[in-house]
Every structure is written in C-alpha cells, then in structure tokens.
Image (cartoon, rainbow over all chains, first blue to last red; front, top):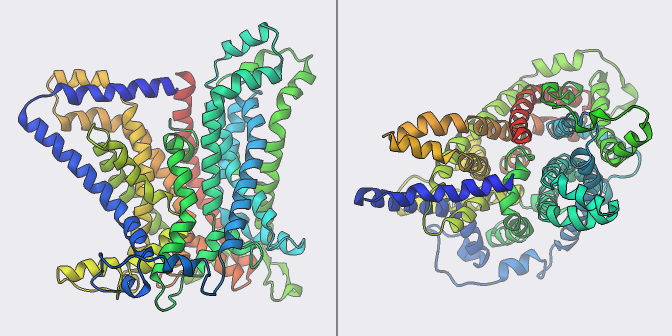
Length: 296
Length: 313
C-alpha cells in the first residue's frame, strides 16, 4: 500500500511544474502564501501560549497585549510548585505510568491478534476486525457508571492500574486495525520462502516480519500513547488524590485564580509537550491511526 | 451495543483459511489462539459494562438512597425524554456536533487543497497545521478559555483593542459558539489530514488528461476531485461525529456545562456524579448509544467500502 501512496506522491509534483506563464506563476506563489498564512493563523494560539508562558504574570495580563515584555521562567517555577502550591510531578508520573503501561499492554494483546488477522488469518477475519472497530464507536459515557460502581465496590477507585486497563480497551481496536494493515504489507511469498529454507516461526517473526512491520508498530505505539495521555473523562471520574493524571491536574486551572495566565500557559505547554513530540514523530502514520487504518 | 457489533457481513471476502479440512481442528484453534486474549479482553471491558448500564437503566436507583432501589420499567426513559434539561442537552449535542464537523470539514478541505501543491516550506506549514490537534484537549480548552477568550486581557480582545473594536465577553455572550470555535480549531487539522490523504490518492494521469482536453481547474475539481473525495469526506464526517458526540473535555473546561452548553456526555456525567441518579444516568447513556449506533452504522459501511477497495487492490 505504501508503494502506491509513494507513486501518487511523486506524481503530484509533475503538473505544477509543467505550467509556465506569468499569471500561473503569480497565482501559484499567491496560493503558497495563502497556505503559509493559514498555517501561521492556526499556530498563532500555540505561539502566543508559548510566549505568554515566558512572561511575568503582570506582563501576561495586559490589554493591549505586550509582545515585547521581558522573558522570565517564573511561570514554569510557579507551575512546578517551587514557590509552594501543589507539585505537578505525581500527576505527570501517573500519566506516564498509565500511558506507557497501557501502550505496552495494547502491543502485547494487539500484535498476536493482528498476526491472526493478517499473516495467518482465522476464518471470518473481517468480521473480527469490524467487531474491534465497532467497540470504538460505543460512547464512553455508556459504560462509565457500571465501571465506577465496580471500582467503588472493589476498592479500585483512585487506582492507576484501573486506568491502565480502561486505556488499553480504548486503544486496542485502533492498534489491531493499524497493525493488521502493517502486517498485511509483509509479502506472504517472503514468509513462505523463509519457511521453505527451514526457518521456524520465531525466526520468521524476528527476521522477516519484524523489520518490515517495525515502523508501523512504533507509530501505533505513539498514537496509543497520545490517546492515553489526553484522556480526561475516565481519569476525572475514577481517580482522586493518589492516581490523578496530568489532564485532571489541569482541570484545577478551570476557575480563574487571580493573575495566573503565565502559569496556565506553562502548565498547558509542559503537559502537551509529550503529545506534540509523539505526534510529530508519528506524523506520516497519523492519518492511518486516526482513521483506524481506513485511510493510508 | 450488540446491534453495532454486527459487522457489515457483505464486507467479508472469502477467508484465505477457508479451504482447510475439518479434521485439523486443533490447527484451527492454534490459528485462533493468538486472537483470543485481545478478543476476550475487549468483550469483558467494553461489552459487560454496557449490559450493566442497560440493566441499571430500568431501575429507580439514587445512590444516596441505596435501599430504595427498585425496578422501574421504562419510567427512567420517560423521565429522560420529558426532562427539559436533558432534551436541551440532546439538542445541544446535535448542534455542537453538526456545526463542528461541517465547519472543520470545509476548512480542512480548503487547507488540504492548499497543501496538495508544491511550495516552499510545505513540510513546515503541514507541521504548523497539525499542531492544534496535538495539544492535550484540556490544555487547548484552558488556552481558549483563559488566554484567548478572557474579556479583560485575552488575546482576542487585545487584538480587537488595536483596531478599536468592541470588547465582548466571549464565553458568556456566545458560549456555544465559543466551545465550537475551540473544537473547530482542534478538529480542522484532523479533517485536513484525511482529505489530504484522499487528494494524494487521486489518479493524476486522469487529471492531466482532463487538463490537456481543456478542462478548467474548477471543472476538474467539480467533476474529478470532488467525486473521488466523497468517501474521504464521509469518513472524516463520521469519525469526527463519533469523537465530537462524545466530547466532554471542552464543555467541562470552557463552560462547565453552563449557559446552555451541556451536551449529553456532560449531562450523563453530572446526573450520576453530582446528582447520584444512577437509573436516570444509565437511561440517558443508553440513548447516547442508540444515537451512536445510527452514526456508527453509516461509519462502518464507509470504512468497509474503503477497506474492500484496499483488500482488492
């Protein structure tokens, strides 16, 4: 599949270059400028957030905005609780544990499943794939109350491992779909040739399948990490003090607390940083993951 | 839930393993084994709670009065459907979802068309455009609430100040519009990515041929590009709907469901988390699911048509 995408990509470049003539070139330049303006406009709120996070609280809360005010790290110091106040570290650590552990669990469950759906498919494998997809369309709120009652009765409220299980169920369909499409790219002929040469299953998996599917698996992991890191509703309902995650920590900023803009910006930026990094790293496969593998 | 778990059976091409003789049952189980952990996990974690919700929805059950729990038939559903607050939240959910999906689809299409051309710094612009989607949703909502919308020192009013414009209190004067704006900002990149993938899968020889035959850009867009993009537009709309119908973060953060912005997920959350009405919350939850089934049926059909094309390719 990636091969077809690549040829399409390079084919795009041909038509624009053919055309000559002043108006065409001007129009082309104009559209390029328009694309740049649109990109900058969409990025403006983030840029402004970043700039504000480095301003002092007094400079952050001015009208008209002060673009050239002196830069300071006070917002970040405040956020990390240097001057007293709640430290974000427990929440950041909780989020890291929940996201990494659930991503790992997703991979452990999804890899064999994807294998059984692509390389050595079970009967009616498309039905199974669509079952996984359909669970993704069940609204979270529909199962929230029983899960809450279950957690309350089994003393699992405010326990990070409950979130790990729930985040795994949230991401497993995405992972199965993505990895199914990545493993389907491994040519059957290559696997059969390796088996004819006497290679056993573990060797085939390690030497033939893994190298081809590795980039896809990495992208899948990054996307699962993003969704777990972002999740609010489960975390908000099921955690309190001990297992609070980073998004729940952020909800502490919902009501205004005097001059705190720089601190909010610093907090939002720090907590979004892992997602921004993971997202940019997985950029090429992002579409495939978000569309559950339907678009390549 | 069981209704949406029925996959479009027509999508299933003959399974490659179908020709196996029945005597090798053990091998069939060996083939199935790697699939079972994931399958069982999903059934237990996602299907069982929903069955429980269905059961609770027929109970009159306030968790503050646990002893008064009793079977209530369809009275919770009756109450949900006649409660003006809940009815308003159904309407809010529809307006919010339709507005956000449509506007971000149109903006996403325009951006995808701009990015489907070669120009200097295309990669950078693409990265800039994806960024809003990669801000943690709560953080994005906080950014809009405090940094952009704040009536006294927010960026919007700051910029309006330069041109001598009015200084509106965005969140209290146009609460739903404000929530929609922040969601459109986050979801336009998503639509753009899907539509860009669609644009790049076009048949470029066909387009070149049309151009040689004298077709104008508009004609090419109207008669070649748009029909090709139809399924990608549908997919974007449906996936967007599935995610935005469920939106909780933006409503919770920006307005806390006040000023007529409470959508169904927020109302369900409030009904059991603050009002402790378990039966009512479950009935509302079941209604959300019924709504989702309607969207999901279409969504699954679109995905399976794209999927079939991939498989047969």
